[in-house]
Length: 108
Image (cartoon, rainbow, N blue to C red):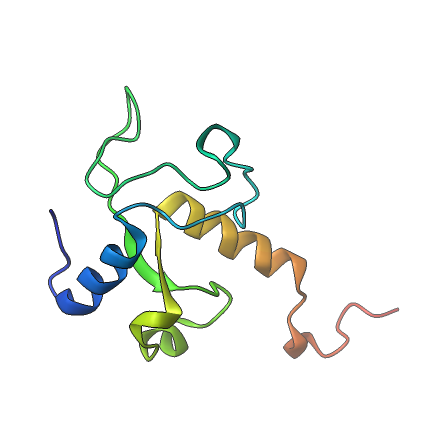
């Protein structure tokens, strides 16, 4: 199994808890209907006929956290994510929740 260069023990703990499979259950916007509501991507498997190998990552269960906040989380607050689900979940959360620091910039 391929592993990251740093935080290997943390990565192994998260992957063992996830069974080596992405833990997205639709937060990315996809229903994952063909795989009983959970993403079917598995670590080190292939994404399809034309896709390369899938490399899961141990990332915050709440992708809205900043990278700094996520880096300090313990293993029980992390999830196994495939890059596609993580990116789509992060993107959907950013567009759904307007940033508070805009300070009424677009209020009319």
